[in-house]
Length: 320
Image (tube, rainbow, N blue to C red; front, top):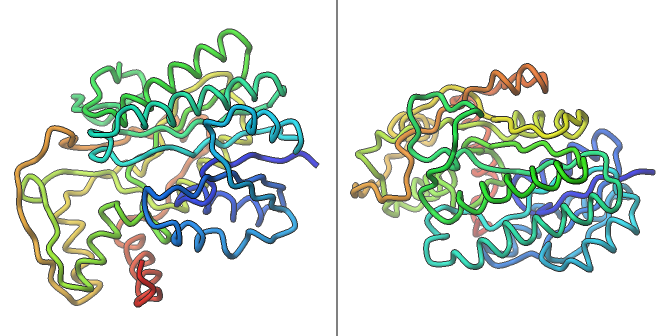
């Protein structure tokens, strides 16, 4: 039975993709190095409900280990790769640029090389809307140059996109690059705004808000993202870059208002100037995803945050 390799499968998006694949009765090989970029226990919790499933093989390992990657593809009859492993967080990348490029570029190269040698039928590369920088006009369209990243993280992801094109050009490896827009939902990373706001609402701690809360983000619920990922895995397209986002930006103030209403609490806000890493707006033109992937995001922000709050409330006291 063929299998899909999911890198970063103990992370936020990766664990959701793994659950969906299991529900579809597909075999998955999950690889994750369980690093300490945030609490390792959170990552262990993400995979606890499926790590022993008969359709799952879990490997604790690093995408920078070229030998391990090549061995994994050869040993498990991998026919598709869902490459989600990465060092993420734009601001954290400022002081750790070398690490970000090592993981996000060299790690991607290892996977691309192993995939083309193994005859993989589809390679999905997760990228980010932050590659667009402060591009105008909006919404962001895939034909924009994306050549002015604001920090090492998006620079490393754009580099990985270009590297994937080179491998596709030379070896005809099918690659679909998905540029994710502000993904949120249950099991979200603790360093991302949705979980940070919820935690601050619960414990009363202060939270930093840039640009008086007027920065706009195109929040996209995790279930919609997973729909797009599965569709992309099932549809080799040669080489394509595709935006994956809801297509309706909201200001941080609107985002906070919804969560304050849901929780019945008020946020302790510390307003500070916007740092040079921050995009003023992310805004997805998802026309290409609709046309090529049948993408149809269905969860608006109000509903998605209500679901996220219900999950978070259920974990109160867990130390998340």
